[in-house]
Amino acid sequence: MSFKQNKNDLLKFSDEVLEALNTGKPVVAVESTVISHGLPYPENVVTAKKIEDAVRAGGSIPATIGIENGHFIIGMTDADIDRFASTPGIPKVSSRDIPIILAKSGMGATTVASSLVAADLANIPFFASAGIGGVHRGAEKTMDISADLIQFTRSKVAVVCAGAKSILDLGLTMEYLETHCIPVIAYASDNFPAFYCVSSGISSPHRLDNEEIIADSIEKHWKLGNNSSILITSPIHAEDAIDRDEIEIVIKEAMVLADKNNVRGPAITPYLMKAVGKATEGRTVKANMSVLISTAKLAGRLAKIHALYRQKKPIAAFVQA
Ligand code: PSU
Ligand code: MN
Image (cartoon, rainbow, N blue to C red; front, side, top):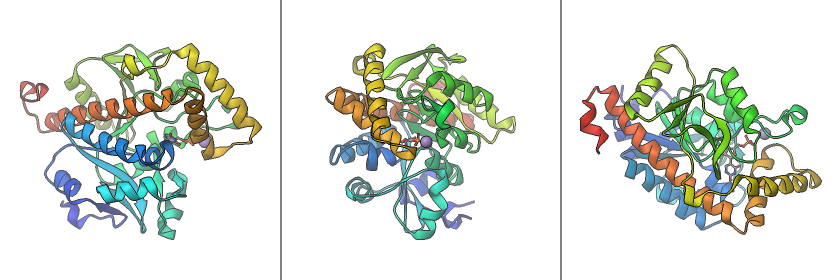
């Protein structure tokens, strides 16, 4: 089936992504909340393009996702990235918000969760995220659990990330993933990473160093009938990482501030990330940029290996590429 006659009029593909999907080239989806809410202008434009370059360096085609004019954009042009980076007031759109923003024909910056909805509809099997959302600290009282986790149970996408955001309760996040049967693979490492930090201190249920076995695990997960995601983690480069004890102090202070200012719901993640950025004089922002790029590059490589695996090409032909 050609994507030109795609069943879904909610998707609008860039020419490059459409061509890639129609010819079996590997594609990696990425989110746009980090562009519209995560970083200031114009660093967000520069970073969004570096993320795309990193996916390409890994051997795949990037598809940055957003919402505009009643459809998902599947693959932003440079002009799209510029608009999403510089237009004030673009809402952060998670899964629950999608139908309304589509119906209103508004712009929307997609989170991990809503980007996965789009990626799955578009048949894009890979997604890169620096750090997924998860169970928030204090969730036993607030019940604040990111829709990213729930969406993993519904979208058939392989998610490459540096673990979950450090501001979260990573122990509870892992428990949630286990309960909901979401496989977690640490690529060439032992522990579940913590976004700004190399390790959360929690060991990962599985370590795989062989990229073809990762591709095979992804395919087997879906062959088993799971219409859900599978996570592949890789930590931030050690030289860009922040010490766990140091970041803990800063996060706790930011949480006190958030509580004092009555920050709730979707606003909490961007608020805390900005607050820790300020408290570390931009070091967490730099770490965030680094990990956005490293995870995009790895996703590009794993998506390429996965695409070749699907075509059953000999391993030697693609491991070196
Ligand atoms: N990066 C930021 N700010 C954000 C996010 C990323 O600097 O708000 C988004 C991501 O898109 C992620 C989402 O999917 O936060 C999770 O937010 P919540 O806990 O509200 O579900
Ligand atoms: Mn929430």
